[in-house]
Image (tube, rainbow, N blue to C red):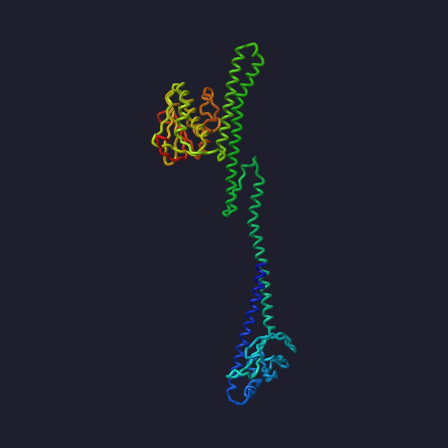
Length: 459
């Protein structure tokens, strides 16, 4: 549509240009004729005889005529004084003289060569602006129309060729743009949870290539998430099987001998109570882990890390003293670290670290230190226990993982404590690390984004 409109505009502009060129040529010829008339009128003879004699001469008129230009001179009464030879038997119809001003007319001429002419009608005057004669200077518009028609044919051909070229280019461009998207859509439609290992691996450097790369990265994250969920289900099934088996076997013993043997009754009830408590703790840990991994769903508020640590240490001190351990918190009094987060989750995180240290430390002490460093709060829990085995350091924060199998038999726990710590640290924008201390024991450090709060006695 735009190309067609442009072609019509070009056609109209080209014809207007040719007509304007013709008008300019006719005006120049009329000015030459007017100059000759002024020269003849200046001889001083009576009336317009010199003008009539000079402008009625066909040889003079033929000097201004050409193959496409015609001249005719009329007197003021509309009688023909002379005309150029190329007019033949054709003449221009007389017009009423309205003044010296020139004007153009489009006149249809019959005869052996009928057609349309552009005629300039000009009243010739003397030096005193008195009319002497009327000059008709004309050009055939047929030639203009022929030139415009040929130009229109060429322009139409070029326009059609351009439209075909643009259409082909548009089809190719659209195809090259849509085809990768269709292939990407088909590849996405073929993928499911059972085919997450498939990747596009496109090497394109355009937007579609970046989209395919982002899709592959998303599949990497999904595959990792699905793998973690499958591992979690497998580990949970394995961990839940033992307490459920104990509860089931003791329930069967109660059914058979509970009413006859008081010792069986007591032992079975204790076992059921212990294992059901373990199950409750495991379910509670799973719920806490799910909450910690929910991200933006948890409410957050400004919290003072030192207060949370002091509260956790205060409640765990009795349990540590029962094992003969010293449990203490260390942090400077002049400043406090403010972390934006969930109070319950952060308290659970510190509690899990302290409980883990107390659980695996048989003698010595457990120290909890809080310090502010480079805009981050660091909570470090150090113990004097057996330390961390080198081959288990990488999996220490996995769900249901226990480093030393012997600890799994003698130390109570769900195997979710450190996994919960890592998830809570992540959801608060932090990290957790663990290492064996050179002097013995282990150290767990949680780093969280924080800012200092000035300490005042009233705060």
